[in-house]
Length: 86
Image (cartoon, rainbow, N blue to C red):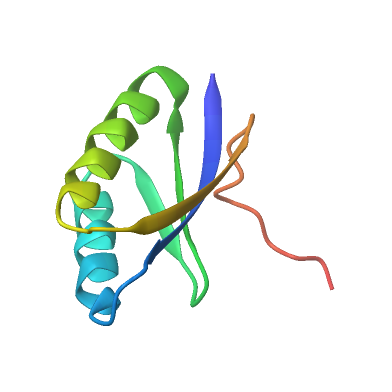
């Protein structure tokens, strides 16, 4: 089953930016399609391979951050080719 996931990582610390950049770089280095905008990062792939990968990467990033918020939205379809029609 194909899924689309929108992620927003918010480390609650003064030096938040390097942690976000590292998280995005690990996502980019994966086998999955990754798209970014100024507010969030989207990752697309098969549920059974994407979810274990994300679990591992979220845990890896949380080890380096004392307090963080991660918002995740999951859509049950591949929306990587979405283009607005307006």
